[in-house]
Length: 440
Image 1 (spheres, rainbow, N blue to C red):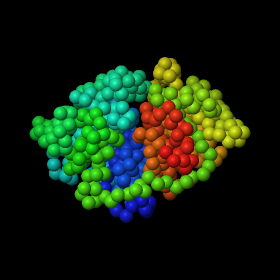
Image 2 (cartoon, rainbow, N blue to C red; image 1 turned 90 degrees about the vertical axis):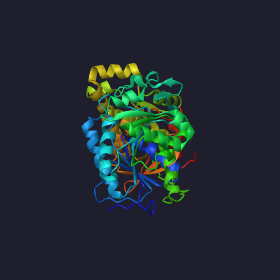
Image 3 (cartoon, rainbow, N blue to C red; image 1 turned 30 degrees about the vertical axis):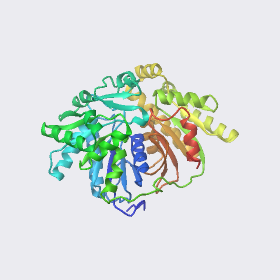
């Protein structure tokens, strides 16, 4: 039996995230709300028991076959129910990363069905990826990234889940057998009671899922309060802002000022970047202006060239000579990514990058690296699996959506797992400073 001693009470909120950085993003929100939070990497064994206020199961299910994503998510739900969780949360990206085949709709359908057999109620949930702090807002069902629509934000060029439609009602309806509706901003602006009434009207009309408008953190708190009685909530991490207060109002959650405290971990540091997002490209460029960096060429790796050994030799040279962290990256421009995909295939190119960076991560650990900053959801998943990490305690926020973390019941490692789209231009340096024990 595993016991983290994170809290004296059984967990209240059980969360399922479709990628690893999304999981830490959500866990970060919950810690900010005073919930002691533990993140697992995959579904733990049936006999594992964890004491915390919130549990987040990190899956790598965003871009796999929909049937496999459903099976993994249902397994996570079963484990979370066995832990005693009272409410459940399905977390996906704030840019609604998905295709017309899934996986948001199919997974939400399956979770609704599984929970409705217990609750004895007509299944219903909201879908709200809004994260205003990071520029993601929803109005009249349309998702904006900053001042532009989703399909004009650069996400239309995503190599795995190109988002070419900003109307989330349409996007979700193409993925699900459920009727999809909209909780309009008119209701959200009037408060939790108006949202609750809107939900009632939608349910009466046969709606099972509703996109929820939100343009500010205040709207997310309103939605969280209105959804206190729903067995399942789906969305980005932002809508979780209002959930800790629900448990507190019910007398189930005490304030935890130390919810984000982590142990100090000594050792060398490194940055690994696989994301090709605009944000990560800018972060890589900023790092390269003053610090050592080594670029992974996927085509060279595909030809059998020893890129892993070359990257590790570069890292050893700089760590020994200057005792400074290095960046090893496969980040590239959209045109470069497309050229690689044309030659190798979309899935094969992504898998090659993940496999290469995972091997490099193992080599860095063997060399004494104990603090890793990783950019990209798929890359983060590959790296934590390669390092044998199965559980993380969530610490304080580095940048919106990205906390510091530390391993539990394993080799001591400090990790910052960043979604490709998140973080300021100087994120890598800030993350390393915090992992080294520095203040935010």
